[in-house]
Image 1 (cartoon, helix red, strand yellow):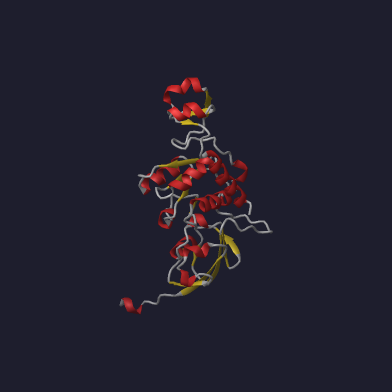
Image 2: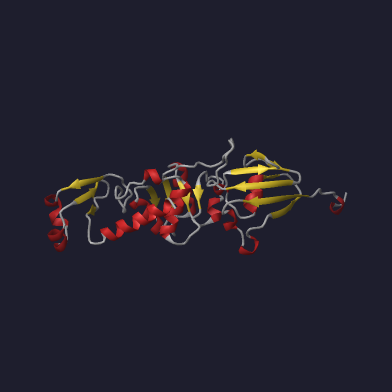
Amino acid sequence: MPESSIDVRQFSVRLSLHGDLDFFLPSRTRHKDITRSLSEKTSVKDVIEACGVPHPEVDLILVNGEEVDFDYGVMNDAEIEVYPPEIQFPQSRKKRLQIHTISRFVTDGHLGKLTRNLRLLGFDVAYDPRAHDRQLLDVMDRENRALLTRDRRLLMHAVVRTGYCPRSQDPDEQTVEVIRRFNLPGLIAPFTRCLRCNNASLQEITKADIIEELEPLTKIYYEQFRRCTGCGQIYWPGSHFPKLQKRLEKIRANVGS
């Protein structure tokens, strides 16, 4: 039989994206439902990601009002509603698809300032500015970390279980987003982690023990010191410290707003 005479049954699906998920859509199509025509059974995950929304951003999927998992096969006309993690529901939902609280991350090379902020707040963030995508995914998978990246294609890798794409390009606003997304306000512990190596063990040390490693003015004006037990980096509350404290306090205040 000639290929042109084969009857392919078309069906259509309509997606409604809730919360801020339309961030991933072209600006001209935001705040609108999306209609797609299909000709074969397709997983709802593939349908959603074909529209540009990475699966780690999706916490609840309703197909014709029924909760489904990512591997649900769409084969007939359907109404699909897609919700992000931050939207809460008064009724009990069984098929929430994302982890809501995680405090260990891996960030891509473009998020160095976000990495610094999160480490300043005490969070474990693996970061290598030279890491390739495969290395990031390996660290994420091996160390059970959430992936933070603005590369939506990277978030769409099947191996990614938990991740987030910061919407803002401002590091402080990105920090607020991550803390909100992963429900971390109660875990904030400022100035407890090494900014250089990510080690969480900073040990108080006497000035006499490190006097030869200090700059002349530091020897004169500062008395309190801590040293990272991992890489040996020395910390003290220098002239920049009040400004840094104020910035972190602003971030914490914005988390609750």
